[in-house]
Image 1 (cartoon, rainbow, N blue to C red):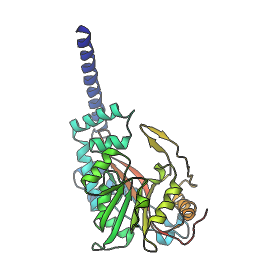
Image 2 (cartoon, rainbow, N blue to C red):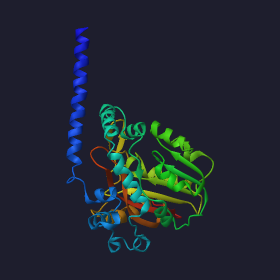
Image 3 (cartoon, one colour):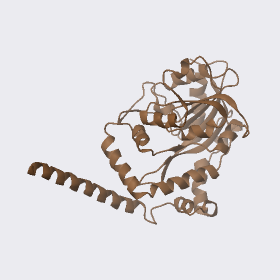
Image 4 (cartoon, rainbow, N blue to C red):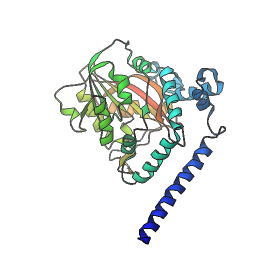
Length: 327
C-alpha cells in the first residue's frame, strides 16, 4: 500500500514539475519582446498598418522571375498576403494563447510521439491545421471565376480537410486520401469520400483536378505517384495542383520516426527560383507534365505553446499532362 502511494506521489510530482516547466517556457517565448512585429500586429488586427509586418510577409511571396528558367518566367503569378491568409494567421495567434489547451496538447504529444506519427497526434487533438492558399489565391492559380464548377476533385494526403474545403467549393464530388486514422475521421465528418491509398487510381473514373499538396517529399516513390496521377486525370482538361516545400528535403514518417524514401529525388540549386526550375525540368518533365502556372506561397501551420504559427516556403504549380514523358 505504501509502495503504491509513493508511486502515486512521484507521478503527481512529475506532472506538476512538467506543467511548471511548460509554463516557464511559455512565458519565455511569449514575452512582448519575443513575438515578432507581425504577430503583434495581426493580433491587434493592424497588419496593413505595420511596416515591419508588411516587410516580413513580403518575404513569403518574394520571387525574382528573372532567376527562373526561361520557360517558367512568363508563367509565374505574383501572390500577396490577402484577407484569407490574415484570417488564418489571426486564428492561429488566438489558439496559441489558449494556455490550458496548449499545456494539454504538449503533454499528450510528449507521451504519444515515440509511438504515433505527428499527423495522427494532431488529428487526435484537433490541432495543427494547414493553410496553403486562400479561395482567391486558388482561383487565381487556376484562372477561374467564383462560379466555375467541375465534376470531381481528388485531394491526396488531405489532412483534416481544411485546404480541401477551399478547393471543394468548385466541385460536385470531392474525394480525398489520408493514411492517418484520426485525419480520416475529420475528412468523413466533412462528408468527403475517403479513398484508400491504393484505391483512388482504380475507381473506374477520372478526376478533373487532383491536388498533391506538400506530399511529394513525404512519400516513398514520388515519380510513381506522379505517373499514377497523370493516368487518373481527365484527358486534355485535367490538371494537377502540386505544392512542394523548398528547399526540397524528402523523408517519410513511419510511426514516430523519420526515414529516407526509397525513391530519393535530389534537386539542384540553392535558391527558391533554382530549385523550382530544377523541379520543373527534371521531375515534372520526366513524369510527363508541363507547368501551366507557378507561384510562391507560405505553407502555414497552426502553432503551439512555443510559436503562434509555423511557416515554410512553398512552390505551388499548376501542371497539365504533356503528350510524352521521359524515362
